Length: 169
Image (cartoon, rainbow, N blue to C red; front, side, top):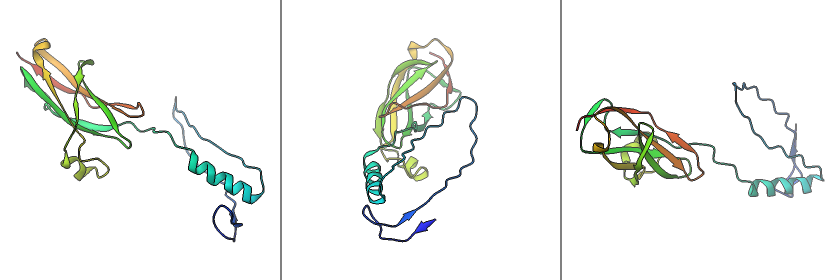
């Protein structure tokens, strides 16, 4: 229902909503919500709601997104190689770590220009690239997996697809 009236925090128009949303939750899912019930005269209630909307911040629930571009999957590598890729987030990427066989090899330099990424992902910043020099002589010869793990400023973490490489020093 809708009742006409002036808009804004001191207006007298109002709406009545009876929300209905069908959804399914899978095993181990978590659904969080905040509900505010304001019992007051409509002008006071409307002012309280406007104040809430201006003061409540929503949490950052999205992990970074990205990929490892180099080395290519199933590459034969030796010596020092460049690990490169890109990562972006809805807020900000704070660090990108490089892992070999799920062990930390080091932290990549983040913020190199990647206009090609922004062409495909319009919300990505131009400077969303990362680079790392990996000394493969610290790895035994044979197959290894490499991945990048990006962390955003809210602490959300994403591990990108593993890249298989063969070390032959």
